[in-house]
Image (cartoon, rainbow, N blue to C red; front, side, top):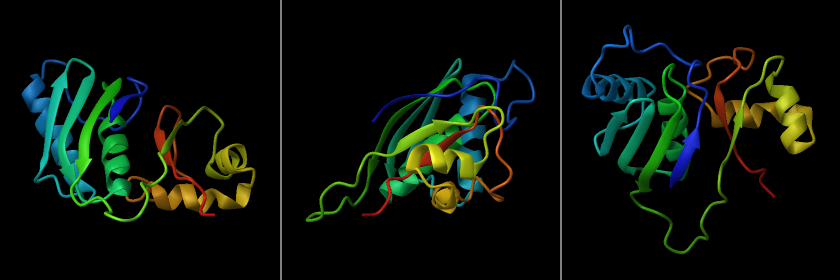
Length: 154
């Protein structure tokens, strides 16, 4: 849980005009999240100016992180207040490591980011896989986009 920042003028263009009401924006963002195959049945979306608040539950920790970045990588959204919980957290297993986020800068590409965060450019596919289905091609990222950076498996 927490507030995650995004670049307001980067991301998918969902809002055709600034006059859209907050409720309409919330419905568009919820629809955008479900477009990537995430179950939004138990997710509530609230928009207040440039902040999205996500409440409810998701099925896995991985999907929680992906839903947050999907909601935040929308033009006009500057932050996501994450209040999502995982429906069935592991009972015996230790909690998964906290996900990191990375904001793409001009000139970045996945292998460059992998070199920076993991020390190995060849690990770019880990970042790509963690950000599917939002990323369809490892060569198609843009400045301002926020990516999930999963921890390396030991």
